[in-house]
Amino acid sequence: MIDEDLNNKFEEAVNFVNSYTDPMPADFLLKLYAYYKIAKKNFNHPGSKTPLINAFKANALIQAKNISAEEAMQNYIQLVDTELRQTD
Image 1 (tube, rainbow, N blue to C red):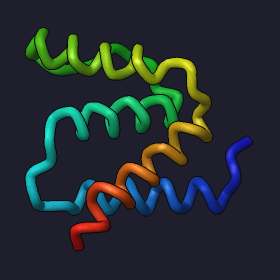
Image 2: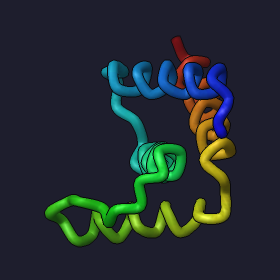
Image 3: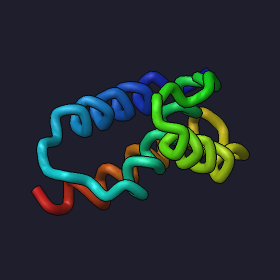
């Protein structure tokens, strides 16, 4: 079971990303995507209409496949803190 404090911090980081208006690099977004999907235990196939985007998303998931939902949340939070919040 995932710690409530960790879950709250994760949801806050997700909300921060969703409200962030500056452009973000594609590789950064792919990492966030993979961590989010693993944290939410959503293993559905990527849903883009563009096969290339689906391939990049699938690759990001494969690269992060051996981490737990808790680790994915921690990685997501750390990535947001170091890459986005440091510039605010």
